[in-house]
Image (cartoon, rainbow over all chains, first blue to last red; front, side, top):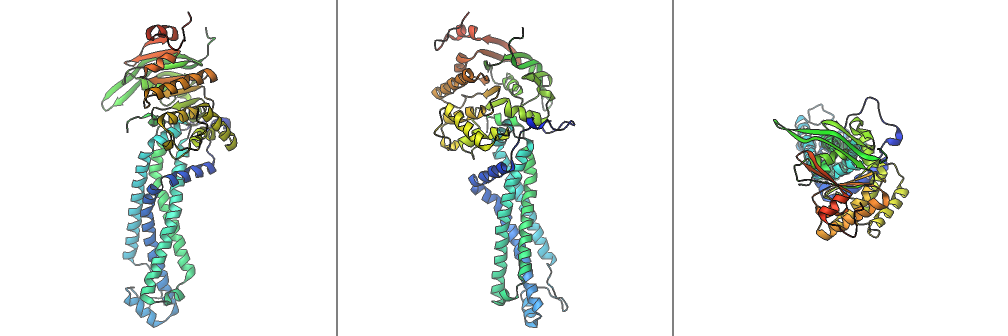
Length: 228
Length: 248
């Protein structure tokens, strides 16, 4: 009942509680900083999954770079390295096995985030209840959780994507030598890293959505609960 | 008859909870009137419906039947936005477990309700420091709750409850987690504030120290008002304290 709005709409502006966006950012940032270790664990699964995604895509970009040189020797070394290349293929595509592995790892990562964030909500029920007693609306709470997840997402996904790319290059260096850097199609590599980062942010937000809704719906009277 | 303003009015309120298959009637028809500026204690054993009544007066729960008026506004008629506004501007909450927000400093805790109320940052800071000085923590505004003792945390909570000059302060067992002397300090502080600012203080409590300062004690038992004692009756049953004699 607490979250339903009357059909008559909002009360006049002077009777509306507010939380400026800048202040929400500040609170979300502070809350992450104070719970740094906790945030690190929540973000860890995201970092790993995104780095895997980035590793696979950047690896393919590098392989495509080699193919684009048209050098048959390079082609041979790619086949030796395990790429499925037909006689006429001019590009390496993500093969189904890779794709499934990536999707699976991303799904596991989302489940991990949901789990960790639900725990965080349970741990913070008193804080959330108190905020609501002080006048916070459901959407303030929702916004705070989304902002926190967004920040975790950006940082975690960027670190993961960069890490994955570094591993892909290290892998290339070991297999094909210094030529990796000459042949690598940089714009495509950058695009892959950016895409992985964006995917990571999205996953972080998707993962926090349900826990944040649970938090937002929490009744203010929860703050009064004594037993814990 | 109505020359005294009633800040809270409870009219034949009942509240039932569904507990599995059983229906539990926590409140069985309570009517009350609370005068502006009074210091009220609600006493009663656990399970008496005390907390349910208390939450209803605080706008945290709605009655199954009957009406609760806060400042002559029927809270059942309010939507989520208006309830939030009521909690923010009209009511200050004090909790047994202090409930400061741990990631924020004492000052930030006090200014948060002012931010919700739309006050600008500088004005909020200034007022926050003033309130912390008022509760005797002027030099500790940068401390995090974890760096403060229980009594100090509760003082911050008292300052926070006053942030938006509320009409009512609701204190749920404010001394429940404090030792004897710290509890007395908090009670004295609340009493002083009620006298200085004219705010109505309503507190649910087990603490008999609280009776000494109350203008009125409401005893709840089995979902009903057992008795309401005014200050004069009290000083007889509890014994006069602190040189405050009831005037007849």
